[in-house]
Image (tube, rainbow, N blue to C red; front, side, top):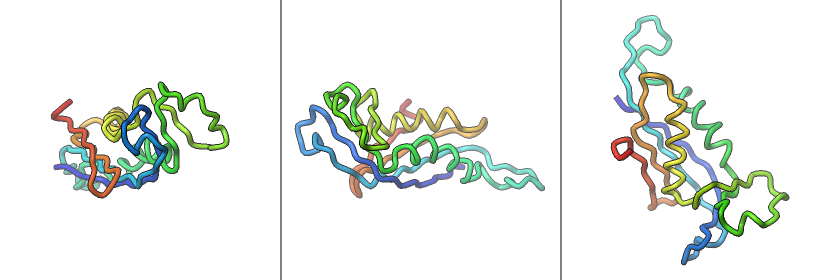
Length: 143
């Protein structure tokens, strides 16, 4: 059985070297969908009986690793000239070792989540939506 948890966060980024408007700093209202699978616990008397994974456990993995970190932040490519700009007036600026596209972000987020899941629970899909019509998907079948 698969379970899915949806998260939301606001984040700004800029794509260095891009040939369109996204080369400028701009923000998105991201939605992150995390899908895991496992066997349903069948342990009478166990508080988690009937669950693959408590949604609170999934939340406790995703929130500190991704949501709390990146919500209301600015994310830039560390290998771009942006890294030379003094942004010390801002609290949450992250320079990533890659271009902060939805494709790269979703792959990075999947690795972070996958490494924290309890034994017997498998990450199957992570979808990152940056707009109402644009998504990037990481799928375990492809990796």
